[in-house]
Image (cartoon, rainbow, N blue to C red):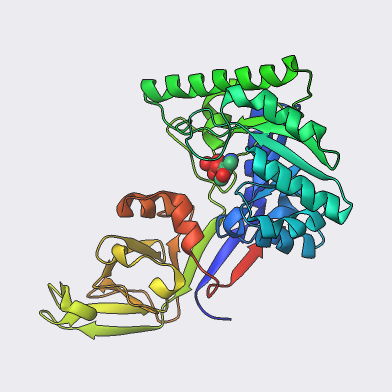
Length: 368
Ligand SMILES: *Cc1c(COP(=O)(O)O)cnc(C)c1O
């Protein structure tokens, strides 16, 4: 196996699940988003661990992601969070994915596909309460619920919304989320008043789980929290599930004044030893980290120097390192700088860091 690998600690994932369960109490179901290959952690293994730890639902973004889970023998309910094309609907029906619907045309298309297959399709109605993405207005919800219920081959299994700033502690954002939740309630009540059953009501992402108890309803959909990153300050204890490791390929001396890597952006300030690591942007390690981040070797922080290449990068070990060739290197992980620290350097979020670790990097599962 190659030196560079992502260690996925399933035991930590399960502990994070337990943390969410303790927080929300026994009633709400937990839907685990495993889109984008479970935020880079591996959808099939994470789905298995999630279901074992008590998840009631999974969620994916694409039909292909749903197919991967079904092909692995996973029979649990799977929400389809993004809208498929009409021509993908036969597969949605055959796989038994649960699309989020929010307009009459699509409801009709979905009903047509289900009828054609002779197989009923469960859908959830998505209400846009202020995310500004998919969803009908709260006012349209009762009418659309009626459209779904009147379709013989469709079943209204749930009603959902999505929160835009639930992870923010700024007072204006807290107020905005309260408003979103109020609008959602209005939509759901409207559905009931019109005489329809809204099914499983759900709206909480990680920020909702942590900061907005009134967004929990019948089911929560925390992603980043389960993968071990705090959605904001004052979050309960969670541990990052992914760790990116590699090993030292080579150590060599560089003289004061010599330069390292493309563009010659780094000049050795003194005679020093450079370690070459077999990981680069071709693995999803952002090129923007060159000169701005440190990896950990034998408990020591070693700065990345010079530009990150496609397959390799370099760190400065200092003039007299005890570090030896082939030693283990932690690029990010819970015991040292995490994907969240890396994200802060790059001006992004940990989601993007773990998602970007690509398929060239083998995943090693521990603690299952
Ligand atoms: C991705 C996603 C989530 C999970 O969001 P986190 O911020 O990771 O908790 C929940 N709901 C929807 C609709 C999503 O797309």
